[in-house]
Amino acid sequence: MDLIVLTGSDRDVLGTRRAELVELHGPVTASFDAREDSGAGFVAALRNPGLFGRSFLLVDSFETLSKESQNELSARAGASTAVVVGRCEKAPAPGLRSLIQRLGTLECRDLPRGGGAVRSCSLEYGVRLDQAQQAFAGTVPLARLRQGLAQLSSAGITNPTHEELVAAVGHEQRAAAPWELTDAISAQDRAAALAVAGRLVPAVGAGAVTRWLGQVARVAESGDTSPQHASKLLGLRHPFQAERIAQLAAHVPPARLLEGLAFCGRLAVEVRSANGREALELGSLHLIDVLHGPGPSPRQGVPAQR
Image (cartoon, rainbow, N blue to C red):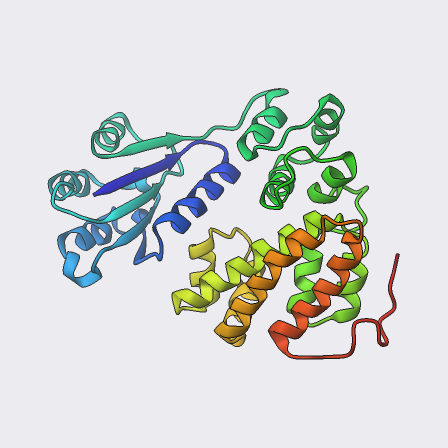
């Protein structure tokens, strides 16, 4: 059995880490909340591997495992082939902590203190910020900063300009946020897609679209397009994100998703050219056609907003 248990006060980092583990080991076979039965359902999955096959199990509130469940876990761990990712809402008691460390890994992610928060985030995502950028980043809520740095990292921007940093973190100075573009593409709103793409840093917009479409493809590939499954599979914190992604995964044919992902790869190159903004604008409209079917020509009846 591979056991990884996450704990600590930094919920954003813990959520990101859990999503990474789901992407690495998924799809998820079953999810449990130990508060409901003190872990009895979770250890039953370990007792009956044939019922779940090669299982990947998620266990919330891992710190509430009863003594009986802990003993069962210890007894079954050696023979089990399951991958188990647990999440503790509170620090585990010393006995459970020792058990986790004996059977697997306990990862503790606490919020940084003082001025180290910005530097810690930039190191986490591999995005280098100069002194002025760090000062600006310190004015942005930590959760929003992490989301923006993740967008930059996914777009391959490790030394952002100030404009790129402002656009990515969604500060009040920004003209548009990356999620506005994915929403417009999902809703087949060509006018909004063109307007938002015209106000985004091209590489940031292309990175956001690529990451979003990859999430849609993962949900479609899993075979379960319910919002609840999408939320667990991708580690999403907001229900509306899961609903939009699940809806698209259910209605777009797999061939169109593959075509869209292939186009995103080309778009990531095109947006770094001298005509990057226009490439993002036209590329966003093309993605609507790929995913939903052809519509009006790119500029026909669509007011470009600069």
